[in-house]
Image 1: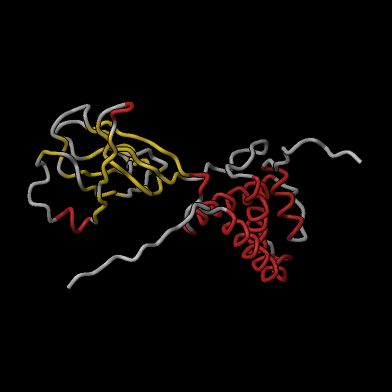
Image 2 (image 1 turned 45 degrees about the vertical axis):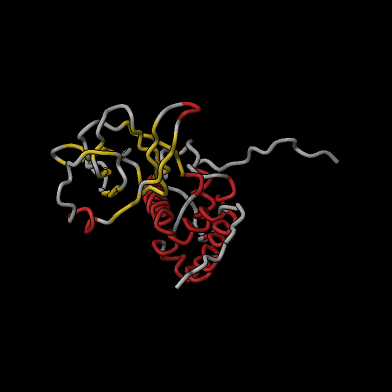
Length: 235
């Protein structure tokens, strides 16, 4: 007995929504059905961003520091930064130095925010990324001290980005294959709340969604070893 020899299964938007409707005991029939399902799917992926760290959305980036400049834009789809360093030098001579994240309260109490030196602290201003009358409201970082020279310091970061929008019927979700069951289960639950005939299934679909999400979240985690060492205290 031969196997398929392929490992490429995925669901485009049409098939994903059809599966979710079928779990609700309904059918995808009209353009409005597609529109309301796509809206629910986008809300679901935003919920996932609030649930925790989605490893496949971690991206590395860098910002070249400019002398005397304290504020720098992050990519507009940035949710938050997980880690960050100040890098000096290039190639085999580069050195990464820790930079401490501080709160807005701490940053606001710094007397001279334009003092220059090697940046040692950063306040991450998590703006909405929405387009406003004056332009795009980018998430930003504010470093202190401000760099004392240009093109010497680089702010290197690892960020969480937003999941891409649902798109049209022929696109596939911006998730790894292992998250597909949770995505379908979540969409079915969201749709069941809006489909009158599916209301008796809401509790069942919610339980299925919670179980699928937990299985996926438990798998989508760092598997590196963790070592804890006691620290000696002297009195």
